Amino acid sequence: MKIAPLAGDGLRLKLELNEAAMLDQLVTQLTQLLQDYSQTALDPDPLFASLEIGGSEEPPEDPALARLFPDAYAEPEDAAGYRRVTEQGLVNRKIQDAMRVTSDLGLGAGIATDATTVEVDITSESLPVWARTITALRLAMAARIGLETGDDHERLLAQEATHGTVLVFDWLAAILDSVLAVME
Image (cartoon, one colour):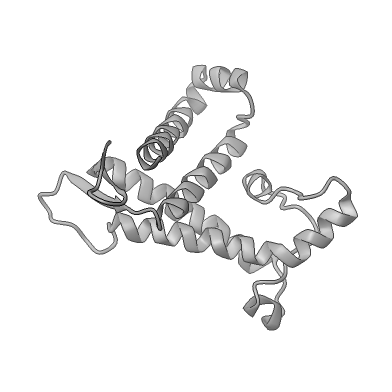
């Protein structure tokens, strides 16, 4: 991975083809998780859906979704009421963000057979989308493997079953940190 500022506004993210493919796969999995949740747990009322209003009153059972959509209030009644009117919009935005990142990566359109890298221009307009999506990926991954503290990080890194996931988690952090540092 290499990052370089663009003349004027933005940066160019240069990924090895396998890095871009892995990022695309992760974002596609996040999109699928969000779409599955949107289709099963949210208010089916078409008016609410069109206004991006609606949602369940209970936090998601899936730990990754619960991490992406935590209670906004400590009181269960307040949290349920808030979730009921905001969850659909939050889910939709995360799906739209993830789809934008996948589109920016451009792997679905096909790339030259001799390509070894993928270059993505990230502008100040698309930076928040990238930051939100990479953060959502990291939150979902952390929830799936039980990564909550620095001690957890070290413990999970030492375990064979979670070692690779922690390395990908750290790689996503490096992308996010680098992109934000260049954009400052």
